[in-house]
Length: 388
Image 1 (cartoon, rainbow, N blue to C red):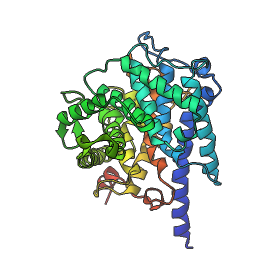
Image 2: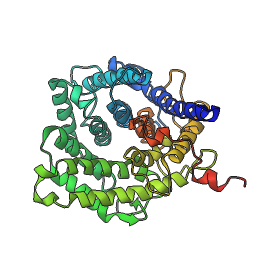
Image 3: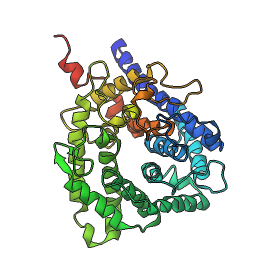
Image 4: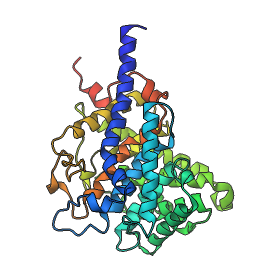
């Protein structure tokens, strides 16, 4: 083996290790505390404008963390160092699911009071859909029943007429997947309205109007993809109304590919990107859609897996090196680049921030796939702005 080949292989291994270590650093405080029934006891609740968010923040933290880490967990344990680490976090997540949905547990969470629980029940449901074997498949019957009861409690919550329709649909998609029946009207209404709200060039309106922010990345594109995957898998049980579901899903994928291309080209040569619109404190969770299309191995032909890996790593490294992104106990702090509480909206609290884990979906790809095994490449802006 030549020195250059050895160096390339070492760089590829180190890249994946960096992603794993970053995900673990972010998610460990949430999952470890919840597994020990001490999330409410130990997690800080940082807010702005004296907002009252303590009734929601814990489900936010867990649901969003689970959604982001689930594809990695779904690879399951093995004898490698990473495989053993996955098993640790599978076990923490399983215990967390039990404690979050068991009315007798100290960390039992709110699934029905106020409106916010609908949002984060949907992220929790999405996490289960992303790891059906290692999470749902390893739960006992009591835990499964408690989860289904908890998800169904959100049915009393009326969604806002925008991306929130997808939260109701995501909850029902999980119930359909794991129980076999669901309120199909909630699913159909959400996907039909979003088809009406499609504006072209890979972008949906957040409701009837365009919003210049990252909600296509935070919620809309990824949840549409995951909801449609359930419908495609269950189409034979759903009847003639779903005979065209494969075609619809293919169109959803094409739209997501266009949006993924836009996202990749937003990454500057130094790994920065524009802090546009609402919820910028979700940090690199904005790139969930790009990460998910890479996870599906359906990136558009104009960009390669290796350049997406390099671009996302640059984004993560840039924000992870910011001063005070974490407090002294390892919890995320309000901000976009470090601790900047003035950038948070009133609905943001500590738990909200864990949507940033969504950038790590690509860890659900095996290390041997091209995303991880191909030599690093410069992403689009780095190529464009390079000195020739």
